[in-house]
Image 1 (cartoon, rainbow, N blue to C red):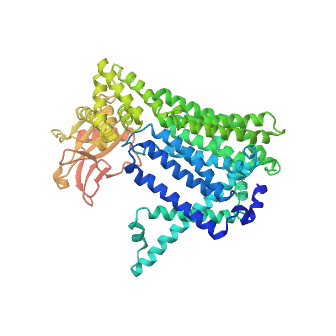
Image 2 (cartoon, rainbow, N blue to C red):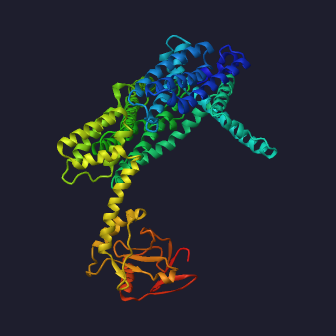
Image 3 (cartoon, helix red, strand yellow):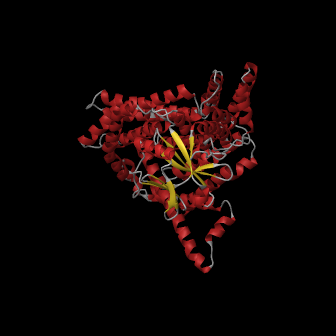
Length: 611
């Protein structure tokens, strides 16, 4: 690390011949250009250009070229940095344009954020190669130089972002001070839509110029050392996870997508920490035997993390089919598996003999492979939307071909996603699906496709389905529950969406009689005259034991009423529930005043909220 950071201590060398004030002004101007590009992409391009390919291509060119110019301008001469940034921006523009061809006008950017992250990752990985290759012949294969530039880039960008954050904190503090004398900086800021973007970019560019000039003081040396000492902690966490993983399979939560993402992130952190420990060469690597041993153990267990991630994603795909998100997760798992096998292989080939050299060599080739994979994912070679659309088309046909039709939660969401989230490929798949459904006489599928086409949001469909399910469960519950006191009737209820999950549970619980043959749940309707006309009902369920106060609204809706259940302990057990049911049937209860009116069943006291 010191090989590059020490020469950079001379500001004139790091700024590549640019003179202080001019260099800062140039980078501030480039930063303002970056801010303007972000504003145009987010606010203007969608209205100016109807073709998403143009939006993506032009946006990738402007943002990519401006961002890379800021990064490259420190290590390289300004003119050369601009040339390389524009060339790299053109490549990013091609990838963005290819990706934009998957969509048409009107498709939002909400489902395409992974592509934005892909372009950012491509730029970040390529930047050290651009710098090293421009500095000297053979720099593209000089791992030490690449390692140094990668860490320097991260630390300088982080310092510049911190400086930008401090600027905005000072801005809003100053605004608060000046508002006391009738001057509002915030009003000025809001008067021009692009001004916040321009200011943020200009300040970031100025900060980048400063960190380039002060490179002798802002080095990654300390951060690399910090990363090294974190490795034993990460090793302990990952080892504990691997040991405990088989015990977490019982509930199935360990194999859902969210924990898998955590596994992938932790594996990526582990690989980064190992790379920090082995550094640019053996002379700069950690000399502590303890830390080297931790790195070796971490490298050896990485394949276990990769295997868990790959297995979990395979299970999800086998059950629910491919989606763009699962393809992204699968690609991440594939990269982690490559790194894990390379790291473990480097260590297992010899614990003492040049394992760190083998690992550095693997890092070089893996970085190139990662760039190739990311680039391919933006082109027709790996079209996640097309692959997913065909997979979900086949899955929907199989699902609706079942005798009972599609009963899962994902059917209508999938149909709506085909319309909105998969671009041109999704809508083509939906059209093919509708045609095949009509040919095969799948009326339920045809109806659901029609609903998906007219729905304004995915919750229009899922809400309707949940509403139908809720009404069915409500009818079952009304039929099964015993209403007391004798002669009382349950008021009309037409809506209980907020209690949909409770209705589903109660419909099942109330249908099962107690071992004694008596009703397993009762509803006691309180006298509305005692509660200012409000209609409360207490439902008591025997198994699983539960007691809740309900309020029957004038608009025929049903709501769970917040209440205080005094004398029942922290929870209601089966004997207590059975005893309450018996007392309700026997009429062994009363309504009497407390701070307001309350229902008393033995020692239990039910106080509606707001009484």
